Length: 270
Ligand code: SF4
Image 1 (cartoon, rainbow, N blue to C red):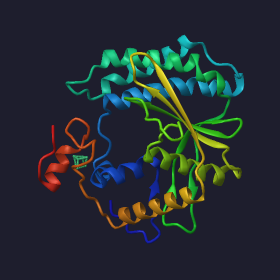
Image 2 (tube, rainbow, N blue to C red):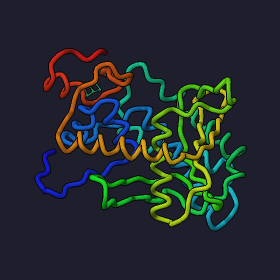
Image 3 (cartoon, rainbow, N blue to C red):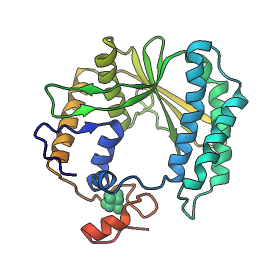
């Protein structure tokens, strides 16, 4: 983990920052021990992403969506080719979730897919800073012809709606991610994103999609740049603290629980 180079700058992505903030010990184990076998949640998210990417990539030139059945097939192909590498927990229900995923991407293709005309898919939006002690490495799911950056998310339950504005209450880590895309897009393309959005595919038996569109302001950007600086400092100084209070801290959800008990002591919940 130690990097003795004087000019070492961590490359931060939205997911690495979120992981550091939730549990910096988990961030450290990921870098030192390496990735663990994917969970069912990762298998699901990756299969949904792949199905959507296949449609969006070809639509850049064709300007037509693939038939819904082709998108469902892409989900199934991705799921089936990765399921043997997945670590299932005894409470997981892979067959039921596979069916939910097929219906969910089918619903996406029959509803909002038609409204999206992409110009870039899985676009690298890396930023090398001169005046900050870190760099950004990230990839945006879809960028539309009218400069809207869209991230596709899967969620176990519906996103709450504000009673005041009647808009989706975008979670903090998703705002962080969108703000980093906003900064990265302007740095790479020399134009500002028109807006940033999240398309949530909710894992319901009856397929459901929720859409949020948002634009960070100057204060949002300053906050995120400051946060990245704090995380970069923590990484450089090797400040890694186990957070046994975070929602994902359990033997089911953290693949590093054995390494964590060995290094830090105590017990991780089942
Ligand atoms: S077991 Fe909990 S405290 Fe330890 S690394 Fe994982 S999430 Fe962090």
